[in-house]
Each structure stands twice: as C-alpha cells, then as structure tokens.
Amino acid sequence: MNTPLDKAISQFDQALRAVTGAVGKTPRQSPASSIETDALSDQEKTEAVRLMRVNHCGEVCAQALYQAQALVAKSPEVANHMRTAAIEEVDHLSWTEERIRELDGHVSYLNPFWYLASFGMGAVTGMLGDKINLGFVAATEDQVAGHLDDHLERLPKQDKKSQEILRQMRTDELAHKEMALSAGGTSFPTPIKQGMRMVSNLMTRTTYWI
Ligand SMILES: [Fe+2]
Ligand SMILES: [Fe+2]
Image (cartoon, rainbow, N blue to C red; front, top):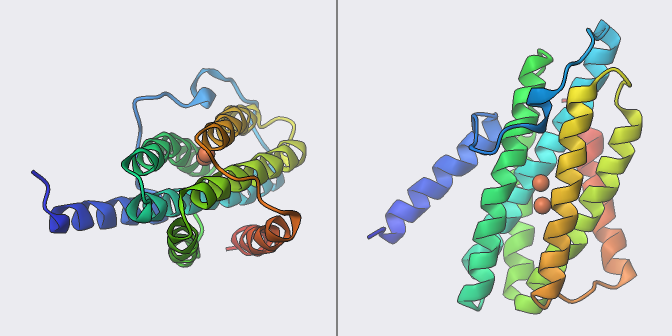
C-alpha cells in the first residue's frame, strides 16, 4: 500500500517531469503522428514553438490544478474525477512537449512558477467545496478551449502537426468541461471568469517569450 510519503514523492516526480518537459510518450498516440507536414521556414518554426510553449504551459497548469483539487476534494468521487482528468491531461503534455522538441524549441522556463501558482489556486478553490471545485474546472477548460481556437488561427498554415494536436486537445477540453458540469459544477459568474482570464493572459504573454 502507498504511504502518504510514497504519494508525495510520486506527486513531486510527476510535477518535475511536467515542468521540465520530460513526460515522454503516453499510450495514447499523438494526433500529429499520422500527419505529414511541409518544411517550415525559420520564422514559422519560431512562431510555432512560441505558441506550442504556451499550450504546453497550459497543460502544466492543468496538471497542477487537478492534482491540488484531487488533494482537497471533499468527496472521494470528486477526488477520483480529478485524478482521472489529470491522467488524461498527461497525453496533452506529452504531445505538446514532443512537438516543441521536433521544432527544436524548449519548454517555458517559467513552468515551475506557473505550476506552483496553479497548484495554489486549485487548492484554494478546492477547499471552497466540490461544486465550486468542479465549477472552476469547467470555467478553466472553457477558457483553454478559447485559447486553442485563437492559436489554431495563429499557427503557421503549414504546421499541420501542431494544428492537429490542438484540435484534439480542444475536443478533449470541452469534454472535460461537460464532465465537470454534469458532475455538479456551478457555472461561474462573469467577474470571476474575468479575473481568471487576467491570470491566464499573464501566463500566455510571458511563456510566449521564455
Ligand atoms: Fe489539456
Ligand atoms: Fe482538460
């Protein structure tokens, strides 16, 4: 049986892999693997790396949120729900880190900071009760889907691999949102959503560059 110390060590190991881009391959194959992409110019590569770095950091934040929320969830069902979602999000981490590497880029140096910030936010909302916990997931996933739409517009047209990854992620994030709402999540009021958007804008603007 796992002791609390075993769990803490495994959680730390998972977090370290997430922030450093060392998750590696997961059983669910990347949607990009069956796609042929024309060679990209240096400028297109740079832009694709920047956008995929933002998306990778978004997945790092998702890991932190789900891990924290699972830790403080009141009911075992909700804790389980969060753990399952975290496992599914590992696929997204894996696909984005692999694509960044193929494009000769690096993951964000700010990942550790954003991991900790998201973990804190997840723990605080998680402690406000399961309905709010799930509502936070739904609101976050909704915003992530919005970001993905924006990035699908901005990615170089030739970069079909990155586009395919984002399209599959978008489908998954919207399914996560629906799952959280149907599990009893409350719909968040607009001012809270605006606050969340401000924080996520800060993340996207910083990790785009470093
Ligand atoms: Fe995701
Ligand atoms: Fe998600």
